[in-house]
Image (tube, rainbow, N blue to C red; front, side, top):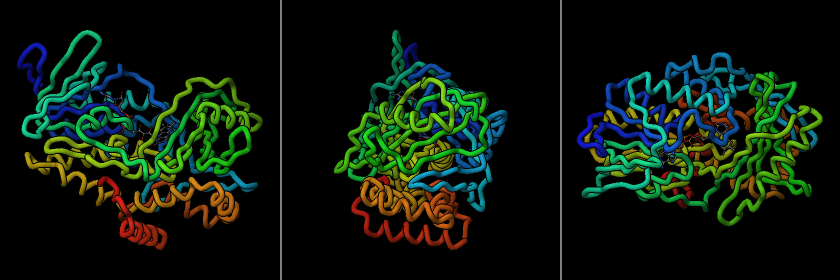
Length: 416
Ligand SMILES: Cc1cc2nc3c(=O)[nH]c(=O)nc-3n(C[C@H](O)[C@H](O)[C@H](O)COP(=O)(O)OP(=O)(O)OC[C@H]3O[C@@H](n4cnc5c(N)ncnc54)[C@H](O)[C@@H]3O)c2cc1C
């Protein structure tokens, strides 16, 4: 980073947002020798409303980043114990080309470690600096205005990676549009003490009911974090036509009440919630010299609400894309890359997610699915994003085929 004037700084790449997406992009770019400024509106360590769950795909991406040490000392889980409609199933993680374990780490800890890794790789950190405005010259982003309580800095970057999360304030300024006619999520979490916080399985209840017994299209979870603590939360799916219209805090409290006897939960603390843009349900994911990644690009799995792995992955993909494209215009190429990478899986997942918003259909299909270990094992694999391009088995082929068929009838394609 070179200082041209007291309040104007230049850099090769400005990354806005130091969550998993921004930290991953900054780490890769710094390792590739780029001059990177990693800015965040919050001061780290900071919290982020999340279930804190890391699927094997997220574990693999952390290994890929050579950040396995982040997982050391954290809990290890073997898969899911799923409940609902009077049934219970134990489903080990089952992606043939992925690790056989997941984890769950508080975001205050995980995100701080990821940001530290980016700084260790050579990125310059600028926390407490919120992106509030931009300067555009002939369509190119030539300045990003960052503000603290008492100072304003204008960063003049060659490229900008927008990793500012689901609401993506900067993305919106740059023309990102969120299309809520395709499925999206709303979710909330809290923390509670439990004597079973070392349980080596994550738990989900697929029959989620509010305090009046009304079935919700979503699921509740208990993710053991070790150290006497669990993350407990609930999330539901919605569309513009079928909005969620629920009090998320109440739903989480009710879910915790239902789980009280088995988990002996202490008082709920650290309540937090957020909307989840999913399945590439946004357009305007890039401009001539900027790219959106992670939640800003709606890279969240519509079938289970996880987004940490996609944030880490899109951080890597964006770094590689930016380096390989040089000074070329990124507007179409980045949307095309996201589409090629996730289009099929997101298209079919959001179609199935939309069905889940129909409570009656869920009430009919749920009991049938949960009765069969074979069906649920397949569902767990595809819902958990555990199909990789290397997989050649029947389930992987069928999932890709379904994805292609779904894309063919999409009114709006992912990322468009
Ligand atoms: C209740 C809930 C439970 C969830 N559970 C899970 C789970 O168990 N597993 C999972 O994989 N995913 C889960 N998710 C999704 C997951 O939290 C996100 O997908 C993930 O955080 C995306 O990472 P990101 O880097 O794209 O964005 P974020 O983690 O949101 O990071 C964005 C960063 O940008 C900063 N920022 C925002 N605006 C600005 C600005 N204008 N200027 C500068 N900085 C800015 C923020 O301070 C933040 O640090 C859950 C989400 C919710 C809401």
